[in-house]
Length: 139
View: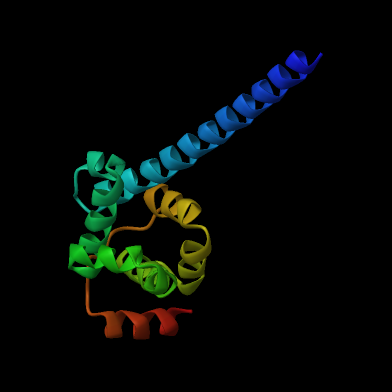
């Protein structure tokens, strides 16, 4: 009886791990698909969206003008602040409104799918101060 109970525990753990792996792969695929479309709008090769850290470098290069800024998002203390900066930069570079920026901060996967498949177009990396003024005037 103990052997059957242990086997059932192991099977349950394996099923749970498999389910988590499936969810993680699906989440990563959704992020990559959204970024592929965003990169295509910006005139960048879509395959770059599938390479883990390089995709963040490319997004920072497209939206901020300097790709190496993605390193600041890897530092634990700065990551919360940098997520806000990334959300703002992506929002402005793709000509979206403030509501999209809030969505990008909290749910980047959904926002990237909207930016990729939606009607917005890539505006490019521009002067941040001027873009922020324009965003608040539009809202």
